[in-house]
Image (cartoon, rainbow, N blue to C red; front, side):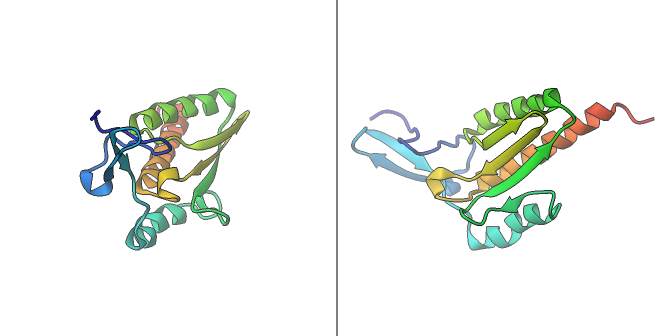
Length: 147
């Protein structure tokens, strides 16, 4: 048997504690598989609500047609948007959790969901927080040192 890996169509999250992972062996490919569970009702009422309530109308919003969150990030120019996307991409690779996103000039539209959980998971909440943090860091560095 080969080492533990993600099975076809399943995200592998190396940094997750074992309690957040589901493991099984897929006999068709002979490997141990890992998937990530969706949010619990408690996580939805606390952690998800915290993210959604940070900036009503300007922050993360729950999509109506699927279990996902959405946000539009606006930057000063394309170069800033692309710099932010690069930082997010590096973090997404570390997590092995990749956003759905669309970029036009200074605008980046993001949707977060976990496909193998058929909806939102802790990974989406972590990614949303990291995206907000990276946006704040980029905006503060663009302003320069405070006098």
